[in-house]
Image (cartoon, rainbow, N blue to C red; front, side, top):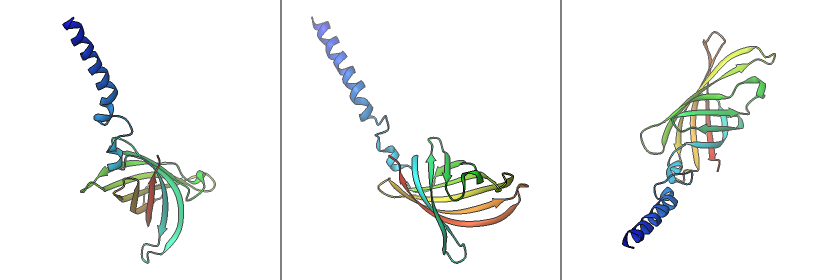
Length: 163
């Protein structure tokens, strides 16, 4: 009788741990960890600026995904889809819990479909305290098909977490 009661209590405790333990230990997507990290998917608004004057040139939407492990993928609508590939790169946390950096690259194409070169974007990110918004200051390097630097640019962006 005593052994059966102990087994029943032990079994009930195990079920409670398995059901409730996922929240207690932060497993799953509802944990607060993603709120303290840029990890996740974001809807961006990118503004290209004149690097000397700071005057805005154009603004367009995009998407960025900061994957677990430090990789990222992005796409933006600054030109026709046939003019570029999606971007791929890496991100990391910098000093301070809300500071990050990233670099990504994509290939560019001329209107006739021939290869125009690549573009590299480096950004400094600040995650807002809410964890649902971020701001970016970035620089861009454009390379010709031979890999030679032919132009540079400046941009800023804001983003909202996709939930």
